[in-house]
Picture (spheres, rainbow, N blue to C red):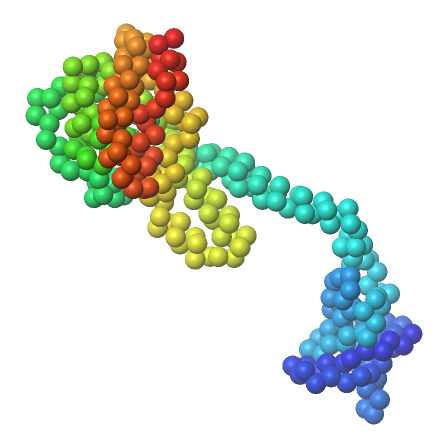
Length: 340
Ligand SMILES: [Zn+2]
């Protein structure tokens, strides 16, 4: 069988019109004037057949032969490639690919990766979490926290309540640490860092100064975030998703950014509603266990809500990085849930 086509010698864009002939186990390229060159069929490389493109042969010496007829298919190339080509021509296969590819991406990014991330969180050494937490803490301190101005005895009282609760809940005191900071940006607020450091602002301590049990309820909510590893989970998820995206799109520099940016990412995203509910229900359960009332929790949220409505104008100026903290003073739903 003779096939007309162009022959491209190794590393050259000069081509010659010539004829390829299949004879037994060889392909002969006939340049016309020279002796025909013979290549063993089992040493040939074939491009995979793509509809509309010629079925190109490449040889071990670097030369290539491209048939003139784009629809021509080498008989010895029958096995795998033709099924691929049939797929490419099949409109249902194309539609399926259009639907399945984004679905696959979505599944990877929103289901598979977060699940893997959640499991991998348990295998993270505590020293890594500790470092991550202290890094974020340093950033937040720089941006939004000032030294506390609370009187020593007020601090000592809250610390005592906090330590008693830790004892009663059998939680490790070297992990759960309470610090006070004055914060214009946050106003009355509290937040927990991944490694167990909990920050209460002067404004919050003062707001709840005559409601010590309400302050305990807030502390329990924050402890709940740490117990359920919410910020570690968020960080792991966003890091894993970024890595997957970087691999898919070949942006390997992105991975370096992940390694450098993990600290800030949890602060940017904030806790999900489910996480807030989980922390709320931890607080409510433990309040009962410790002999307090879930009304203490409702009191705290109510106080925070009114405090934040009056300082709302100011809160709007808080930049995005710290926005998640403003998600804490929250809705009637949480108050109703606690009063129930
Ligand atoms: Zn929370």
